[in-house]
Image (tube, rainbow, N blue to C red; front, side, top):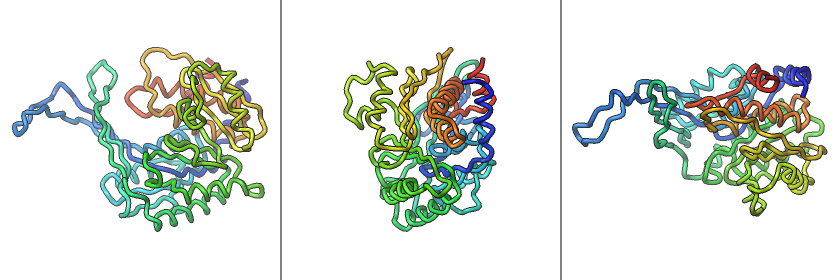
Length: 346
């Protein structure tokens, strides 16, 4: 890709409206100073003293942070938070993201749901990379109430009337306990299949547990998810060109994107009537942290496609962005356009 082509694509980002539907959660980081550790009088166990608390949107919120870093003009959120302390923190975090449009009331707070939270204790020693301890997670284990789903579906319909693309992020382990219930997924798929007369052109879903549930929508999966989904063995031995052939085979009946991230090998994918292509990963240097790399890739792929990039161009931009993110330690990082451009043309 030439620099002027990169600039041409990304100059359109400010004019994009993207719907982001899925499981927004709170990423809460507890920074612990091991130099002031104490012992509990009551239990005789070590006491970890927290010297700083950082909170930011996680899950779908991580994709949001990346869209903001890219300078996307407007993001319409479809999701929920609870009326709990974590919900308050999440809402405050979301309000601080300039591209997020909360005026449409498409993101709801409800007493019927607990705010999805990843609480991450970090050991922070001077001169060393932060070290994460066991996480403390808050989740919902019962199905999302139908009244909440109906409210979200109505919100989704209004958002898609204004959007050129939709991202769907399925973060939960138990189906139908989050935002992306079967009814909401079906609504999105129906809209993308009948969107020839409206602004909506691209969809991209990312689901850890059930990519098969997003029939009719674009999908981004990693190597392990794709091979389990399609019952492919010995996938680690496949070359990048062999992956492009596989994607041509399994994605030929869909006009929506299909991307498979291949870890250290890179990424392969296609969109529309294009033939599949592959892009190599960037080499690493020093210590890396892969947390957030997948969400960064998703944000960059859909943004570039919505701005008129080919699948190959979108993957090239996404791989450069992911390379930036994995070298940011102790946080769920993002990649700005300036950082991506520097990586692409250094």
